[in-house]
Length: 445
View 1 (cartoon, rainbow, N blue to C red):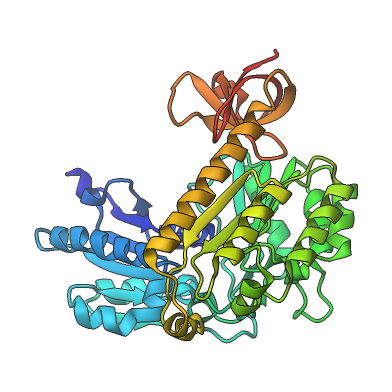
View 2: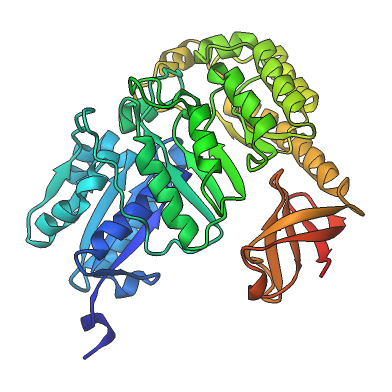
C-alpha cells in the first residue's frame, strides 16, 4: 500500500493573521475526527484548504497565486480543493464562478461546520457557505489543534468586531462581535498548558470589549485574573487591543499580575488626530499617549508595538510628521506598517476617490517610517547588551540547529546555545549582542 493510501491527508495553506492560524488549528482538530491526518506536503494531500486573508490586497493576490498552483495539481490527481477565510466570505460567489474547479468555499463562520462541508464536497457537491451564524449560542470550537504542543499557544476569546474603522473589512468578513464563554476559554487554557504551553496569547478583534455583550459575564480584566490562576501559565499576552477601550481595571491588572507580559501590541494607525477622525478610530493622539503613560506607571519598563497605515486618503505631510513624532515619543520597539490598501465596500473608498495619496508619496513615507523603526528596534536590543534577563525558552532558533530561542516578558527574542531539554524553562540569559529583530546571549546554568 502506498503512502497516499495509508490515510486521508489534509494540507492547509494559511495566509494572514493570528486568527487565521488559530482557525486553521481548529479545522485541523475537527477534520482529525473524520480521519484526516495533517501533512506539510501538498503533493500528499487528498484535501487542500487555502485559509485566506483580505485585510490587504497583497494577501488576496497571494491567494490567487497559490490557488493556481493547487488547481494545476488537481488536474493530475484526485484532489478536493477548498478556500476558507475572509476572502471566501467577501468574494465567495465570484471565486466559485471564476474557478469552476474549486470544490468548497466557506467563510470564518463555516469553521465550526467544516466536517460537514468537507463531506459534502468529497461526495461531489460544490459547496458555498458564506452565511454568518446566529449570535445566540455561537458554536465556538472546543477541540484543540492536535499539532499544538509548543511553549506558546493562542486561545480565542471572541469573534467578529463591532467597530467601524473606515479602512477595515473585518466586520464584513467576520461579522459582529461575540464573546466566548469564559468557562470555555479557561478549559482550553488548561488543555494547552497540559500539553506544555506556558505563554498564552488571548486573541480577538477587540479583546478589551470582551464580555460587554454577555450580560452577567466577566469583563476582560476579570478574565485576565482567571487565566493567571491556571497553574503553569507564566506569561499572558493578548491581541488586538483597542486604545479607546483600555480600562482602568486592565491597567490595574498590570500592577497585580506578574504573568501579564511587559509588552503590549496597541494599534495606533496614525499619529494625527485629523487622520484618526477620518479613520473613525474614536480616540485622539492625546488619549493614546495617556493610555501608554498609565500602563507604564503600572508596569515600569513596559514596551509597545503598534500598527501604522501611511498614505491614508487625505494624509498630508504634516499628518505624516505627527505619526513620525509619535513613533519617537512612544519609542515603539516594533511596528506592522503598511501603505493604505483600498478594501471593497469600506467607507475609506469614498475618501480615496476625493482625496487620494499617490503611491509614490505613500511609498516614500513608508520607507522613511520603516527606516526610523528599524533604528529604534536596533537601539532597544543593543541596550540589552551586558544585562542578564529571564528568558522563557520556546524552541529551536530558525537559523541554527544548535541554538534555542526564547522570549523575555517584554517580548525580546533571545537566541542562545542550548538543547531541547531547555524548552519550556525560564533561564537567566546574559545578552552579548543586540540586532534589529533579536538579541544573542549566553545562558547562566
